Amino acid sequence: MSRRVDTLVVGAGYAGAVMAERLASDGRQVLVVDRRPHIAGNAFDHPDAAGVLIHPYGPHIFHTNAPQVVAYLSRFTEWRPYEHRVRAVVKGMLLPIPINRTTVNRFFGLDLARDEVANFLAAKAVPIARQRTAADVVLGTVGQELYEAFFRGYTRKQWGVDPSELDSSVTARVPTRVDDEDRYFTDSFQAMPLGGYTRMFEAMLDHPNITVHLGVDFAEIRKEVRYGQLVYTGPIDEYFGYRYGRLPYRSLRFQHVTLNTTQHQPVAVVNYPSPDVPYTRITEFKHLTGQHHAKTSICFEYPSATGDPYYPVPRPENAALYARYRALADATPNVVFVGRLATYRYYNMDQVVGQALATHRRMTERLRADQGDGAIVAIPAAPLTS
Ligand code: FAD
Ligand code: UDP
Image 1 (cartoon, rainbow, N blue to C red):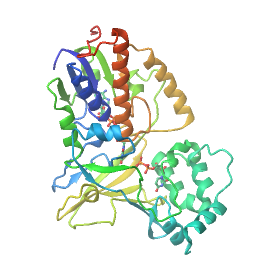
Image 2 (spheres, rainbow, N blue to C red):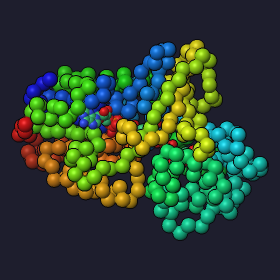
Image 3 (tube, helix red, strand yellow):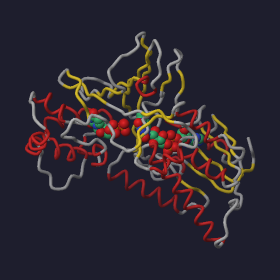
C-alpha cells in the first residue's frame, strides 16, 4: 500500500475512475481503492463460467446526449452500436415499453392511427394540476388502466413503496409515445463499449501516476495513507458515520442463469410488472454485447430492502436528509464527493461521467484563480493530512 499520495480516490466506478484519470493526467500521484475485488463499480462485466459476457450488477446500457462525455470515453474504448428495446409481459402479451402506438392498440384491442392515439390517451389521462409524484406522471399521461398494468406493480416491487410516495422523476425516466418508436432511449449516442465496460475502465486507469488497490475498504486505510486530497465516491451517509441516520437505498438480488439454448427472449430486457411475479425484469446479455455463443446467460432482478446500495430513493424526506449530509460535505475541506452514492442522485453512467468531468474542471479553475493566469502544468498537492 502506498503510504503517501497526492490524491486518494475511494471507489473505482465511473466517478472514481474519471477523477483518477483526470488528476493523474494533471501530474498528481493517485491511489484508487475499492472494497470490491474488481474495478468498474456497478458497470463491471466479465465472462461467466460458460464464457458469456455478463453484467453481474444488472444490465448496463450506455446512452447519452452529451458529446463531451462520448469524446472523453472514446479515448478509452471503441464502440459497438446498440439500440435498446424492452418488452413488458402484460395480459399474456409481450408489449413495447415505453408505451407506444402498438402498446395502446394491442392492450385495448384497437387499431388507432398516431393522432387518434394522442386523443385516446388524452381522454384516458387523469387531470392532475401539478404532477408531483411518480404515480401522477403516469396517471396524468396514460390514465388508470395502463398505469396499473405497466407501472404500479413494477414500481411497488422495485422501490418497496407505492408510486404515489416517489418523486415524479422516477417514472418520468420512461416516456410515453403515440407513434411506433420502440427504442427505450432516443439519445443521440447509443452504443456499448466494444470490448466491454471492464476493458474500458482498465484503459482509463492504465496511467503511470495511478495505483489501484482492490478489496480495500476506505475505513481500513484512512489512517494508514497520507493524502493531500480525498475523492470519495461511496455512500455519503457512510462517510459521515450515519450521523443523521441512514439514507435509504434500494437494493437488488441478481440471479444469473446460463441456458443451453442460443436465445431466450426476443429483446435484451423483458419487464414483468405483475405483482404476482417476484422479479422485475429478465435480461439476456448477448443482445447487449452482440456475442455469438451456443449458450445464453440471463439475469433475474429481485428488488430488496437490504444489500448493496444500488438506487438512491427519490422522495422529499430523503432529499432533505441528503441536504444535511451535503452541508457537512461542503464544510469538509480537501474532500470531494462525486458519483451516484456520494451525491445521492439517481444518475445514469453518462451523467456520472459528466459530473466527474465538471468537478475536475471546477477544481482546475479554482487552482488557476488562486494562482493567477499562468498555465497549470501540475496541480500541487494540498497539505497532507494523516
Ligand atoms: P458505483 O459504480 O457504485 O461505484 C462506487 C464504487 O465505490 C463501488 O465499486 C464501491 O465498491 C466503492 N466503494 C464504496 N464505498 C467504499 C469504501 N468505503 N471503500 C472502498 N470502496 C468503496 N446507468 C446507465 O447509464 N445505463 C444503464 O443501463 C444502467 N443500468 C443500471 C442497472 C442497475 C441494476 C444499477 C444498479 C445501475 C444502473 N445504471 C445504469 C447506473 C450506473 O450503474 C451508475 O450511474 C454508475 O455505475 C455510477 O457510478 P459511480 O462511480 O457513481 O458508483
Ligand atoms: N417503470 C415501471 N414499469 C416499467 C419500466 C419502468 O413501472 O416497465 C418505472 C419503475 O418505477 C422504474 C422507473 O420507471 O424504477 C424507471 O425505469 P428505468 O427503466 O429507467 O429503471 P432502471 O433501469 O434505472 O432500473
